[in-house]
Amino acid sequence: MSIVTVQLGQCGNQVGQELFDTLCSDAEAGQGKAYSAASWERFFHQTTQGELEARAVLIDMEPKVINHSMAKAAKTGRWRYGGTSHFSQKQGSGNNWANGYCVHGPRHRDVVEEMVRREVERCDRLAGFLAMMSVAGGTGSGVGTYITQCLRDTYPASFVLNHLTWPYGTGEVIVQNYNSVLTLAHLYQLSDAILVHENDTVHRVCSQLLNIKQISFSDINRVIAHQLGSVLQPALTPDSHGVCSRNPIGELVSALACHPEYKLLSACSIPQMASSSVAYSTFSWPGLLKHLRQMLISNTKMEEGIDWQVNPPPASGPVRSLPGGSFNTSLANLLILRGKDVYHAETGGFEEPSIYTSWLAPKDAFSLWKSPVPFNKYEKSATLVSNSQALLRPLDDMVRKAWNMFASRAYVHQYIKYGISEEDFLDSFTSLEQVISSYRQLQR
Image (cartoon, rainbow, N blue to C red; front, side, top):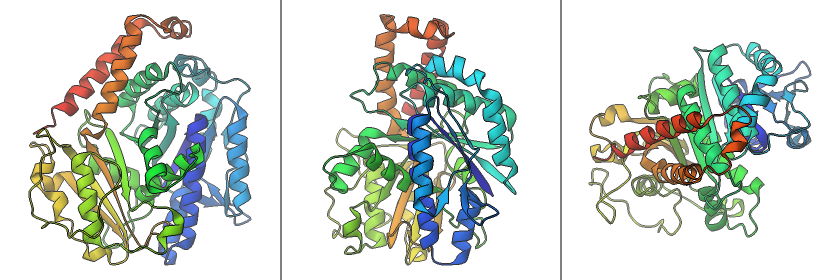
């Protein structure tokens, strides 16, 4: 089954290009034709000339980023974007969610829906949609939300997974918290699941683990693409009967978003290191899984400072509370293991009841996917996708900052002039306050 990716705005298009490049490189290096064929069927289709063409639609209100993404893809010589699968205009959304959602989205709905329809018709079987966007600006967030609504209306039986890039806490755009509130509140009604990457967290990975001195958005996008690729590439699920999973988005949603009040997913991967160091490093499954479990419980997204030689505790050992007597409580977790000796990995530490909320049994809350094929040059690697309290603090901070601005009516008139009322803001605040309350109540 195939996934149609919709890249929206500057961030969505840049991350999307890195994702397809990662997927193509990994599939080419994959051990065995079955893995490569399954990956290519999922993300690419072959032209009559035998070229790999991404199953993607590129949308932005300015042409520069789309042109750059298409040229960068073609330059690889391995894959490219379709010549008629992109849409841009001459004027952006001005970092205004309302301009994107109320003006640009409806104005260009027909042409975007036609491009999506063409991509869907190229799929033998549609697994669902991956909509990639940021929440800080105007096009990615506003047009992205509107297009997600169109996907839900036009393909009501298909899965929709939104991938969101969360802005730096120090601020990229003065109204980024308004845009984020409006985006998340609306997507919560439309999307099956929302997978979030925080720029602050990925920046620390680049700095502390990859030893990058001058970090660019390209560096950040590559880390995000690596983690997304490790989730989306073919793997064996408990019900796949020895063949690669057929519907990764549907199975991801089924494993993690089992309740409509809980749709926020976070991801972390280990190991993560500079490419020059990978060939000289060895890892064991007990060590990798011990540290990944510690990262889950303590809500840290990287293993910086951990002694890789420390022997892991017994798999049945109890979860230790963090200072203050609390730890990150999960609704559900999906563990994806890739590489050598993957079938000998012991994962019992992720099935302990104390990790999870009390109203869902661990056997229903924990899912495990495996693939013996190494991913992206790592002999062994593990990725954890978690529906937990991991995003509670950044969500709470974002809503608080947006509310403080709204209370003084700062910049509200810029949204009203495009058709968003104060009542729309209040409805969005109410919706997200309920989400925050629900995640707080996960605590055992």
